[in-house]
Length: 176
Image 1: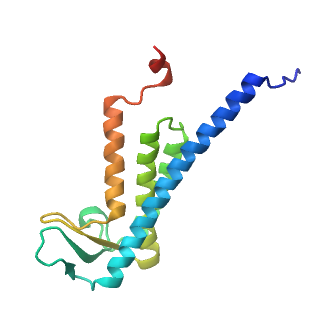
Image 2: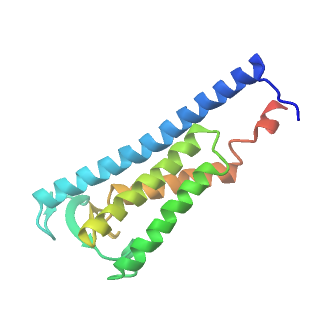
Image 3: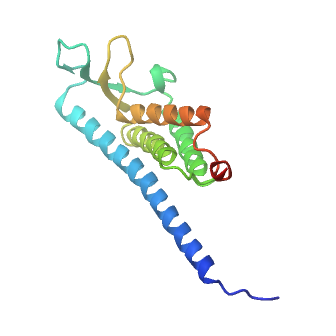
């Protein structure tokens, strides 16, 4: 068996690859952490300043309102907290697998998946700690939602748009 010593080229390629991976991971996890922090801070402010059912400002069409949700999106699966916690944990694991295999090469896709992860963990945190999710953004004729919900939706929309457009293209297609 012959041992091959790394050449200067393979050392540089490995170092570059490691740097790119580190940047990508930093973007992914910092996006998720920022979304999680913003989500938890805004929910805390709403819980601390508004009573349940109270809204501010009263006369505006778009308002902050303190409501809670024991179900999933649009009020489905009410009082199914254990089921929703388990499915969210499975979803978070799927998001991490989707992020790592195959690794994303493009920053927009990395940030979009980070947004989805941050939103999922934000709502999971509420479910585990409080048994319900705090929602507070209220548009007319639309269910109330929060930062985590918004981040999940925006992240999914960005991924769908990029995948439908076929962008970013594989490295082999970009060179041609």
